[in-house]
Amino acid sequence: MEVKAFVNTGDLEVSVINNVSISDLVLRYGSDHQVVSGTKILRGGLHVYGDIIASTVNGIDFWNLNNSLVIMDNDVTFTAPVTFENLVTCLVKVDVTDRVNGLDMLQLSRDIVTVKEKISNQYHKIDLLLRQFGSLNEENYMNARELYAELSYLERMEFPRDTEVYGELWVGHIATEGEDLFLKIISCPNPPCGCDTECHYYKVKGNGWLEPVAQLSIKVDVVNHPLNDQHFVAIYSRCENGQPIARVDIDYYLGTSPIATYDVMGMVSGTGLFIINEMNYLVVMLQVVDGKDATEKTVIFVLKLDAVGKRIINTWSREFTKKAAGMDLALIDNTWFLLVASNYDPMDKVTPYTVTSELFIWEMSSEMFTMVGEYVADHTSSGMFLTVDMPVGESFFTLAQLKEADSVYFPDNVKYTAQVLVFRYNKVNKNFEAFQSLAAFGVVDQTLLVVDNSVYLLLVSTVHNCLYVFEYYHPEGFMLVYKIYVENPYSLIILEVEDCTLVAVSTSNGLVRFKVHIKGVDPDSLLIKI
Image 1 (cartoon, rainbow, N blue to C red):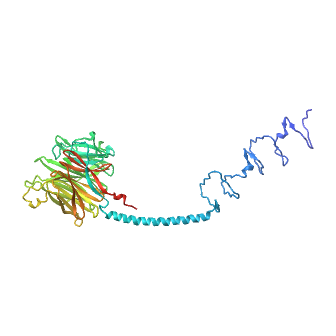
Image 2: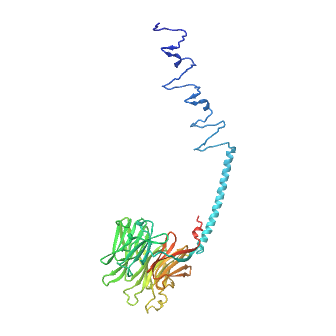
């Protein structure tokens, strides 16, 4: 029967309409309680304005969720016991007002504060005791000169004959060759050296052995000075047509194109570097042959190194008619001193080897050296500044004399002119005065050895074929403590190698090395510094 439309005013029970079960429909309007069975898909979302009573949503048992912790952004208060069966990490402060594992947190906090106060008080007491002990220890350390460590003896080392060359010695680092220590031997057939000078370089091993470095063997005298700005200064002499020409180069590295150069006629015989107000000044001593009468004279230049402006400025120079044996620089009492040790005066036809050595001080306002003293010596072979720090700060310079005076005009000088003259700095008049003459004869070279606070003056003599060791005792002066046989010495130097300290002596038979042995305890291991 086909019905196009009908109106029902009573109840109508229908289970299926157009093959759709009424039980599968969710009615928008209806009674307060409806039972919906089967799976329903809501594509537009679900808005609920009342309570939902559900047992499981997306596989989560809501009845069990009531007994679990829920992560929330607001404060949470636990009113029932909570058990954590795994690690709990707190990224913020946790305040517990009651007990943890039976411990009262409030009381525990008070106890911890008390313990911290006690620890702090004990720390301050220990720190005070340590400072008192350290002060006493440092005072004893400063006063106990030579009680800890001093020179015991020099042991002659048996090295293979690793060099046949002898001459003037130089030791140091070369910027282009890494951190290795290099020894340079400046030799020539007939000293004093000129255009026949040859330089032989050796790498110094940790035990003092020498390894020749062929690529550095050159026929010029190179002196290396590292500056504060990491530039590299090379001072050398080269010969053109038998005439020496000295050159000063400021390089970033040796062998590269220099950023500044300075040329002057002469053979380099001494150099020094001093710094004032962050300005670098280079002192260069040259031996120059005067073409008029073929006499040799000494010329000293002071060059200011302007690395920023890429310039070398000649600020001061002086010619000496006398021939200089050497020069030295030292900062004493906030003043730079220059010592020029002279050994021959060609203008003096009577006593050419009895000459004066000059002492200069640097005048910063005029950028020049001013002479402040002259000191007579015979056959001077070398001059050197030295400083003693303990127990009282003292400064000296020495003049070594090769042999006795040979002039009848100075009979009083004969008794001391073969010795080493020592001059001490007078802090009152700010100059050097005669202090001592050491009974060391025929000295050709000298150097300084420092062990802890003890200072030793080392001298080599060609007359007695020996190495003299003088130790400084305040206030008596230098006293002879060792005299060691060394055949035909020429020069000496101190080598600080990895395994030990060596005294190296260049002789006609090769390089002789002595190992420095120390007795006592290194005081630095006993000193407590706060």
